Amino acid sequence: MLSVRRKAVNAVMLGLTGICTLLAVGTLLFILGYLFVHGGTSLTLNFFTKLPAPVGELGGGMANALLGSAKLLLLATCIGVPIGFLGGVYLAEFGGSSFSFVVRYTTDLLNGVPSIVIGIFAYTLIVLPQKHFSTLAGGIALGVMMIPIAIRSSEDFLRAVPVSLREGAMALGASKTKTIFTVVIPAAKAGLITGIMLNIARVAGETAPLIFTAFGNRFWSPGWEQPTAALPVMIWQYAISPYADWKQQAWSAGFVLLMLVLMINVLARLILSKRGHVVR
Amino acid sequence: MAASSTTAFNARPSGRVSAFWRRLRSGDDIAYVITLTCALTILAITALLVFELYRNSAVSREKFGWSFLFSSTWDPVAGQFGALPFIYGTVVTSALALLIGIPLGVFAAIFLAELAPARISNALTFLIELLAAVPSVIFGVLGIFVLVPMLTAAEPAIRAVLGWTPLFSGPFYGVSIFSAGVVLSVMIIPFIISISREVIMAVPPEQREGALALGATRWETTWDVVIPFAKKGIMGSIFLALARSLGETMAVTMVIGNDPAIHGSLLAPGYSIAAVIANEFTEATGDLYLGALIELGLVLFGLTIVINGLARVLVLSTARKGAG
Image 1 (cartoon, rainbow over the protein chains, first blue to last red):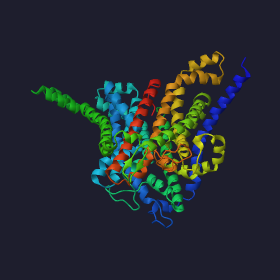
Image 2: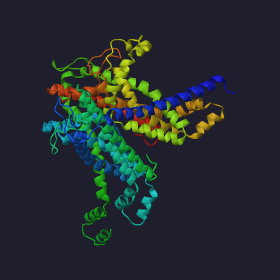
Image 3: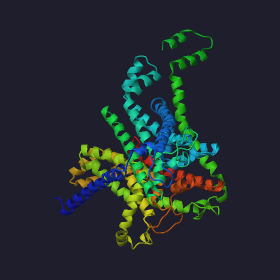
Image 4: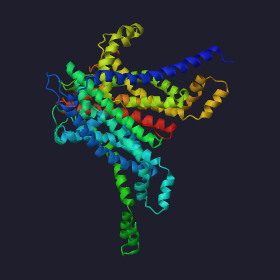
């Protein structure tokens, strides 16, 4: 017979696990709700079309920061995705055992390096020799962050393709390269695209590596050689400013950034689940 | 492919060269070299990263030596730089985050893996993984505008319960080591939950069936059989969370109070390594100041590399596929 005490412990502890889950999920709903109420409601069209207003004036928007973030992400994707993807192809298709282990381990370590340290890296590499902040430096910082994530996700999705597909193609006389590019990669397409989207969503919210690379700008930033505003950095600067109007705009910007990031996340997972891949 | 077979039959005198060209034509070697180069890039970047941090912190390393790590003076005007207040802030906030995050995260993982029906578990895990995707600057904004006022309002209650310890004494301005720890805990919980859940779900069902058949309650089965089985993986998730919280910048800098001093109380403001780099890097004048900040980056890098390395070993040794 179960003692009353054991039954009680069972019920209490199981109940506690449920409460902890509720707390964790509740936090997300709280964040979404709070940002929606404070940021979503005060969002205006000006936010997307106007430059920031001069200090002391009310209004203005963050159009330059939106464009700046888009440029930074474009550059980062152009650097991070090809290198990461091909590196992933190497690990999944060509790699030997010990060298692959070293690459994989280094990738995981680089992935764990704090983003602010990556910022210092880009600063010493580009800003110091050039002696000025630039979109280029910011994009490279984000690109470096994307490489390890891209390597690991593309390796995982390529590995999930059944070996029988490769064998079939090779039995028909295709070379290894032909097999990889016409059979394996198309089969893993949904996963690869998901990986890239999640990767972009992750660096889109990065603030720390941009502070002393892209720096910030209250005006448009033409080309790649000038400092540029970016949405996450703008949120930080506005949130810690002493002006009520700026703080309000930080809420709106936070709302926009969060919606963007969450939308990419949801979309990416939808693409994956549609294709019936349960691989993660 | 037809081209490569014709060249094969055009026997040329220089056999080795033609064999090389043939292999290149078929593309395998080109693809091998290109993808290998990309894989090598990651090693090159990591090596370059270490080299740049080391080289650019030379001024500070030469001037202060090892005392940099143990000195608590941070005075840019006098050119005196010591990392201790920042190391203290980083370690204490992360420890606080783990103290709050581990029980919450592991318990939630138990619920999701052991109790909840698959559909509910998957839906909730999806929401929790979204929580992990929220950018850190958003946590910072919520930290200063929501959490800090909430903690200020709850100050009497906190003091009533914990005020007898020296850790919760002294004045409280809202921004503090404690606030930073709370924000960090919210940020790391999703990592602990999603990895721990996977590790717990990987425990073979026979383990549970055996314990249940012997008359153990559900909780006893989970706590005495399943959790010990998944222990290493859960430890791995905790180390990963720790590495993440050590390097967390934006959320911390917005709520920690940015005061480069060591106060004993958790309610006092502090500073973390990442936060001081974020705040002072652009205004650092002179090579020594910049060098000291880059050396702080090197310290942070070393700290997270060690923790991450441990985490990977632990996670790999339980689940063969590393989570991350």
